Length: 292
Length: 83
Image 1 (spheres, rainbow over the protein chains, first blue to last red):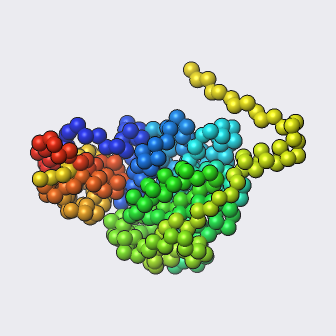
Image 2: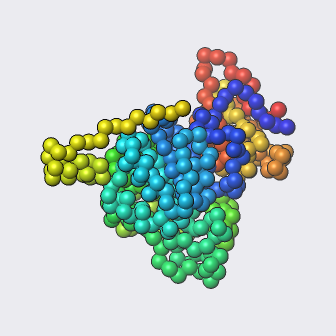
Image 3: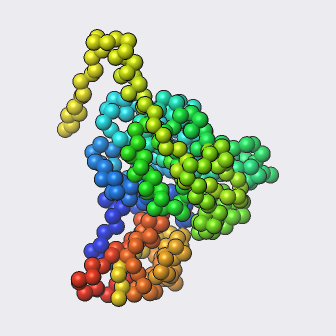
């Protein structure tokens, strides 16, 4: 067979549970590509893996938690952000990453998304947006653009869709970026930047779903979609998020839209308690986790 | 002389073709051989052109390929290709 053997090891391999490979994602699906960018961001930012926790919800992207060799948790549907909030509050030293799909984060978990952004909880949210509910068979999602054909809208979607960067910016996120799976290096850099930010960071990654979305809309396979991203995406850093909505075949505005500073949830909590309680406020001593 | 080389884990490949399409120096092509799942994995057709940029590794959704730079002080091994 033509298995090429040599002593080079893929740098991403150290972050993967190799015994779980090959994974369940379809040929041409972009989720694996986003995992590459995430792994490269971990290498670039030299983050301590002991201080990192990854939380996923349900869906195709939710499987990431099972494939990465990090402290990870696969939560119930839509509840990735509440779980991550609990992790962050219990152990403020942790870097908590929420890695989930558009259906999980913006549909069933939509309320949690806006309230985590409003409170500015220090979470890094990576939302892989394939514009559809992929794992359950291609139903219309809140992010499905108008006129797209889905299994629940065979004559075309007529609902207005969510513009996620606009939603989270309005709710109060401090870092908002959007890339596609074509922009691998830019995405890796964006994730490293988000690790440097304190507060709610949201990175949307547009990804192909060749099996359900692209096939039903006659947009070709995963490779054709990547060529479409290459051709139609336009980098506009700092673009007003109200103008970056997605359309079925139109331009995709990518880039870093928001990068601002606001006090995060725990800073505000401490400031409030010190103000109202004064010396009576004693911070909880840090709890050490004793394992084994 | 090649500046880099490509390693491919054939059994993980699902033949999406991202690496073949987006290789900046067009080192790869999908081979006519099958892996055990019936996909055509890529193979190296122009090993001398490889720059070792690892863009194929960044794009691969199946973690099946990666490029590495060859340090120029060493004599490069026969890089990639079908074996």
